[in-house]
Every structure is written in structure tokens, then in C-alpha cells.
Amino acid sequence: MTDAGLEATWSANITQVVWEKFIFLSPTATATSYFDKNLGEVRSTPACREAFAQLVDEVMQLASAKGIGMA
Image (tube, rainbow, N blue to C red):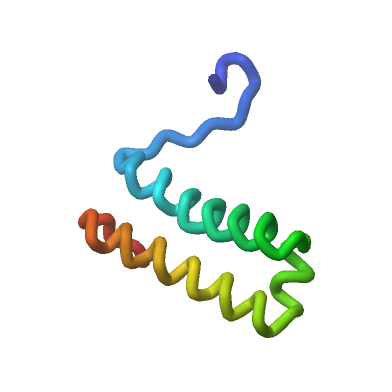
């Protein structure tokens, strides 16, 4: 990829990288779709922000159950 001029990063632990993205993207897509708000609106609305935090926590628990260590 770098030979083609694209920025690329190699990771020895691709599972960790995939889960880091999933932990952000899944709750973000769910909350913004469910509440029909953009992420800024979700974050600025207390009830929506709490639901988003719960979604993140749920995905973090799933990663932990699968043995994926997240910092």
C-alpha cells in the first residue's frame, strides 16, 4: 500500500485494532440511528449520552468476554 502512495500501518495484533474500531463504530452507529441525531447531538443530550456510554460499556464487556484486552 505504501508503494502505491497510501498511508498504511502494520499491526502485529490486528484483532486488537479491529476491536478498537468496533468499540467506537458500533455504539456510534447505533445511538445516532436510534436517536436520529448526529454524534454531537447525542453527546450534548444527557439521556442520549448515557445510552451511548452504556452501549460502549456493553461492547467493552463483549471484548473482555472474548479475551480481547482493551486499555
